[in-house]
Image (cartoon, rainbow, N blue to C red):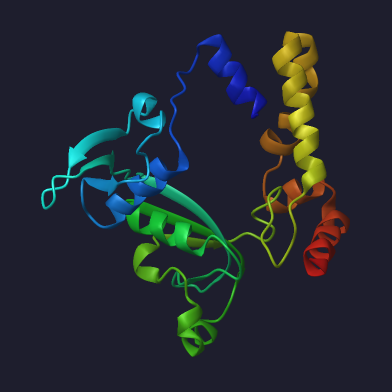
Length: 222
């Protein structure tokens, strides 16, 4: 349950809110369409409406039917990852996340996309229907091989479940045990977050080329 987030909520250093996925999707959709809110009917009968700060009750101007509205969410900056893109920022997803990433790109003020590989523009132009985010929504694009790790970038490589479980174990121990139990977590952060100077250094810290090939083989077998 995201141990570090949970620890901050339990300590009162942050204030959590009951915000469901539909609120976020509706908020991004409103911003993408340039309107201040998105009407939603699906929350009827749900207690989510009592605790969600993004939701307000409204009435349909045409029928008078009671609906709910979720306010627009316009990020100042969106960081997205996809499998391919060209030097102009035309992005191509080879699997899922197509709808959500395009919606976020349209909603945000600035968009930076990392991709596992930059491909020639001629290749993008030759198959235009495969472009999932056109360059008009992208401010910068950068090639970062294995840039989604420890998450996956299917079909190129799989989620590194072992690495995520290792982090979760350290974070949960820190949540329960205080400074002494938290030392391994600080060592983890130093090794994998603070110390690496570039992507290659990070990859070496999580198992190097051998581990990346394993994740590629796992994705190929799915």
